[in-house]
Image (cartoon, rainbow over the protein chains, first blue to last red):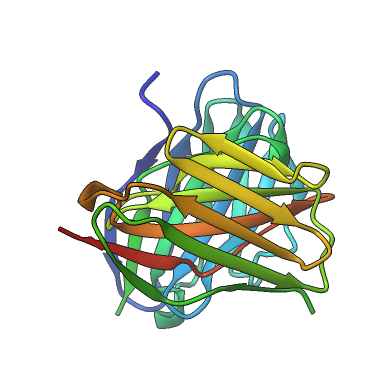
Length: 114
Length: 110
């Protein structure tokens, strides 16, 4: 397996634009997590899915953020409208048993909002 | 509120020595504690997991301890090598929640 695949690797966008980040989890993993990493706040959990169903989205900062998982092999994180403070590295991770096993992280998407 | 502190932002150590990284937490009762390694420009990579009823876990040159009374985990790398240079993150997992520390950047000097 190629691991968790995220796209794009880098994204630069103007404030106010819509941004969509994509993730393909490892096949057979029932859990998918979206994280955001910044120097100030470290790695923060935004939302996670179990069997394509959102379980906990309490980490999603605002209504501008939304995430979907239409099937077991694809998830998106959308920011609309984007703001400069959304600039961060966004990671997707997947696992077999939620928090209680190792999570496999993708390479991340570095988002810069200017 | 829940808080996780990793001892220092950066730790420099001589090659061959044992590196010890600390993860302290407050207002939390984790069932599991994990350690990850993160290299620049890459996602975290899982290293070890230890459960609340376990005191110690080992894997090759790595050792993790978990003291729920002190609310502390120690992560040891014995016979450290320059290739061990990276940022190490601890993560606490409880019911329906996982929280990461901000990490300690380890530099192993040849």
